[in-house]
Image (tube, rainbow, N blue to C red):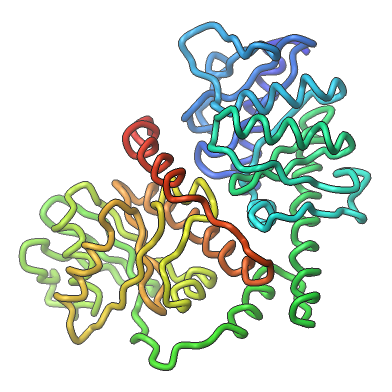
Length: 401
């Protein structure tokens, strides 16, 4: 394939990955083979919607050498292995798609009898390795060698690698993989519980119903999203209510009734001047995880990077707002999210886009924690690895955006 043609195909595929929800922001990567010795790949840490051909990097398959100042994706090694081991493969996408990300943590290869013409008979799981490391490359290489008929590889705690003869074939693999992984989870639900569900939401609702319910649930809070604006902050409720609040004294402009979580938002802004946005997420799986009454462990590496090495759990008491708010602000130290007992999670960031990204990875990690109830001895990412990824993200990667 001509180099420019390959670069344009990669740019188009990157936009398609975001549009279809297979990745978010700069997560994941895309590449296309140029010839037997080279491929082009997306750069490290750049948003897909603004890429130009100059941003797409030409890389040598065998020694990963590249020219120029633009740094290729740190996952170039696993793409290179796909091209080196599979002469028929001309396109590779690395996704963080939902069902596949969940299945990749559960430790069992995924059988695909209904999608074998696209995926192969079995989708293997590559052993865990930190993103961009030789250990991850080694695990993917082993999986590709041991399952020569597989067109997808699940990477433990990391996502999926989908390969094809061209971009369309690779996207067909990603689509079939999502269906096969859902079937895998549905089958396990029936095997363990005897119950049947047709969707991931249905699976997690049944798992939640089987869990021990709290005897004294926390008061239910109305969720507000907020952002800092100079010496004030703006709170927006689900019903469209918008309130302007003074950071100094907590007074609401216009004399409107203050919400019960006002002090929660105000204290977080006062205690951490780098936080400029708060999303109080009450998505179903986040609510379910907050009802488990325990901290949320890191099952996915993008969660460890973006949200934190784990999420602490706090109860917010509207009858003791100042004390509850101070404890919540303290629990956010070193993290970008906090579970609120029975009330979802607070996700914070330097802006609303970043806070929404924290919400995305938190919701997916909560989904993994629910599915893990169906499997034996599901492992989370170790503390040292999680801390390393979080530190690198905070000090280096997050500053690129």
